[in-house]
Length: 325
Image (tube, rainbow, N blue to C red; front, side):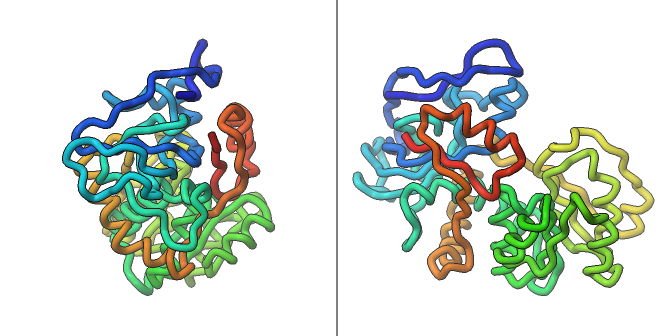
């Protein structure tokens, strides 16, 4: 099969479409013919040598796909050959076929195009587990989503609104902010033209946010703690502004607040299966009735993975870029 592999010196790793061995499903796994693969910022980090795949995962990137089940491994009863599914992967999605534990797959939701469905699994699983499991977001609370125009952020805005939270989202530029409001944000802050701290305080009457979903990391740590309400939860899922920052422990203690960092890729197969099952139970009905939908910026051929990375790195993408074999 064809796959997009990384070669050359890092951080400027070269993406090349090459022939690799067709994977075989092991016990509990399924082989899927890929219809589309989502492109994530983690893929750019892997290409730069900063986010290696976990042991046992393919060396080429790709954390989420949609496609059709081609073959079943021993012991699989939850899927059938011919099922259209999405899958959460540890890696290897930039390819014509993938193998994945059956517990990390879900049926393509009703009403969602098979290709566009690849924009859902990584984003939805990341948003759900961090908003609900880690952030303990409740109806009526205020959720601040940094990067509401991103692949995860655009889904987090929708899920937060569907859960009954008041969503405040940040985005770069007035048009992107307006699109965040279309997705369900009550308030959208243009971080290029507005002071985010002042805007969020104004939007919350000075109270702050109960949950902050952050992709910025160290550079935003101080401001994020300032923006937390009493009892607030800051959940860090990205490091776009660095891995270190200054934390005012006195302010954190006074607010009885928490700061948590999480990743999804490194979790065990069982942990991922639990997240996927929860998404199927709680979020898939939101997708089916239109409260949550995939946000696709562009579809590119698999051979144009380099262009897809450049597009994502440009800062112009709203939602997801997809690669189609």
